[in-house]
Length: 138
Image 1 (spheres, rainbow, N blue to C red):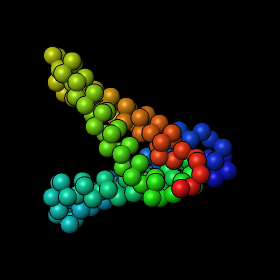
Image 2: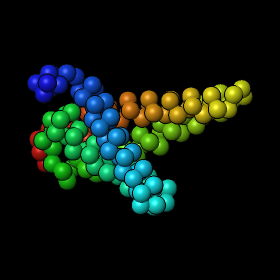
Image 3: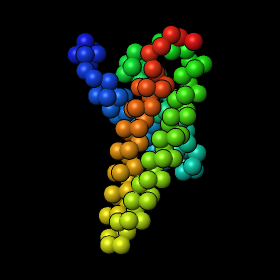
């Protein structure tokens, strides 16, 4: 199975990593929120942080097989994650305003789907061509 996955394209591996880090981050969020009774903001911040941590290391080793130095790639990873989030959800917010005239629940759901799709695509491109670009380890 591992040999098969290494032969697949990096976007497919990126999506698999996304599923894993989402399950881990979401599980932590729900555990902290419900079992530890932490606040929504603290639970989601810690869960998303752990998910991003998992994402970074799995994408570095499994998705892109990058040897780029941590000192170079970690700041780039943070820049890409934040930039993709701000851009994608700003665009989806604009889409919400366009589709809002009818069913607002449908418009909100459509905006979330647009934002998530844009975020995934832009995050993949940013990680592949900027964060984990295979160049000499610095």
